[in-house]
Length: 377
Length: 83
Ligand code: FES
Image 1 (tube, each protein chain N blue to C red):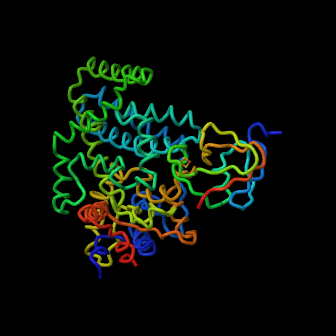
Image 2: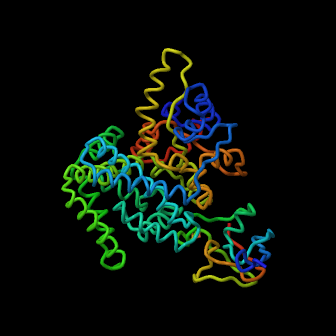
Image 3: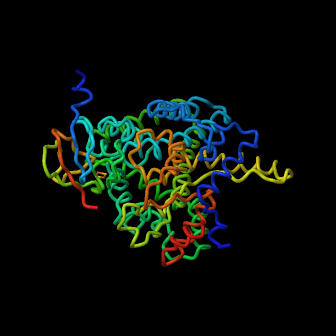
């Protein structure tokens, strides 16, 4: 058995067995599908969300989190507010703004741009316009996707995670960044620069008014702990979440030349990243299984692999799907309707496994993508 | 009657495959809905992957290069894309 297989790349049929094993647990099927990011093979559990209800719920969570931080002096309420801000700001950035740059949020270019800019302002993240270029032009292009010109890889390089470092150094680098004030400061300055763009005065005005109001409210409530916790949720934890997520997203530098020139240039270096592990066959392991799900995979799903990120490979194969809120079901359907010549789907269970594979690739000079694919058989 | 909302039906010939589109839908949308294999990626006019050539007919487009995700057919059209 190969080393790579042990890291967690599995075929869709093996993966389906893992997901279906959740039916033996006490978790309801709908919850299991959401938690793992993988739909059951037979039970059809379509999402209850449309794009606008999803957006409304996430925005409501964000402003509720802010309200907890501004108006409450109770530390427990403030902590809940911090988590709500983190939960919602990551969804606004990684799901809402992301769909908007593809014009697939509402489907209307102007509405998507306005919502995208609004969400970018309130989450203090990269402005819609420059993100659209970074994402659509560079990240989605076969010439630059997962190469040193991909903005995500440029960012990883500036964080010190460079191609050719040993895997242990990469892991150390990841942990160092998470705790490094220098990393957080640089990341925050980058976010600030995107927002303080004097060439776009109207956007800048909205940005100024929004943050002036926020600071005024915080100041008038004299809520120092709320302000510190807002900084923790919206800046520090947000940055950790985004950073860890991109460390597991694609097999960076993993594309082969032959694949790059085909329409499936993204397929071998993207995967479904699912949160969970098979339900244990041994009864004694069941309590541990619940603990691992509740204290590892659940927080990952809530705060790191948010929204449709577990099905990110499906997004690269079908980038302009309108019904993206239902990506869990759609991805399973797509596995069954794979077209001729289309490489089959790859699946990884556990965020740590996805990061392990990415770092293994980053530590090598040559692409090992084919090796991965073959070993998953 | 609802043509001003749904658009007028048009016939699209794409790399010799024929399907029905609408004047209110981009060529890319119509192709995807009809399960016609077409090269594209971002869907928002940025990556340039969906560039097409217009062989006959008329399309509405603001770009110099014709992008399937950005252009709307104005009549029956014949288009092609290099594979
Ligand atoms: S799909 Fe990217 S420009 Fe049309």
